Amino acid sequence: MAKPVLLVTRKLPEAIEARAARDYDARLNPQDEPWSSDGAEIARRATAAGAAGILGAAGDRLDAACINALPASVKVIATFSVGFDHIDIAAAKARGIAVVNTPEVLSFATAECAFTLMLMAARRAGEGERMVRAGQWKGWAPTQLMGVTLEGKKLGILGFGRIGRELAAMARGFRMEIHYRDIQKLPPEVEQGAIYHDSEDSFLGTIDIISMHVPGGDANRHWLNAARLAKMKPGSIVVNSGRGVSVHDDSLIAALKSGHIRAAGLDVYDGEPKVNPGYLTLENVALLPHLGSATIEVRDAMGNRALENLDAVLLHHTAPPHRVA
Image (cartoon, rainbow, N blue to C red):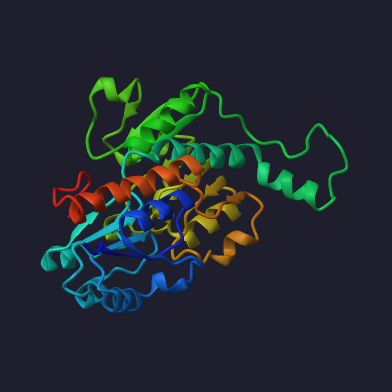
């Protein structure tokens, strides 16, 4: 019996590609060619291959036009990510195509990345590293590159989901006070002493550092804008490892230039891989290339989770465990 055809839009870890090739007629992208951001190209390749499933990733352009152009053979789209705002869910539902994601395996790693950015911003690590590499370091000095400590700071977590709670657990080890903003107050056993704010003004006016962990989409587009930045205490720090679209870049750049925001640490960008050029001229911002889940352990776990969902639909004809649509 012929194996189901699986279209894989990006180069994935070796173990994941080997498993896909074992169980499917896998059409891989070994050179990681940049066709995955073109919805028309994805649809064309799926049609040419007679794909039963698509294993895509964040950054794929799976909009309504792409999904409506997919062949009737496509039964499931698996995204190599937790977020699925790059997929038109309504269009997939209308076509009867299941959409699955990879939750619960990358929370700790993404929180690690957020904490890395928080330390880099607070302790001016990026500036120091650049100084050493450029051969400009003249030796230790009492007032050189003085940052601020995390100890005793009020950390505000915007979005107290799995990643936010992992970050809170790490921050407690640095004796930070945890504050959070979410849709509703969570049970005490989940809060673990974190302080809930039902008012945006109260939240922004209390915290010393904000770490953003909200989903993408229009609801959170440019959430951190000039008005909200103005409500934060002078000298605050901004960290974003969630979605680039949630920050209004020009407003944050202006706040960094004025000093109202002491520093920022960013792992995601609005329109990535493009980065607002205003950030590139600033010393008080640490920039990472979307490293949130980039560990060997997590990427393997994400791939296996995606394949478990694909197996359920295409091999076992059962409900996938992590269906979002």
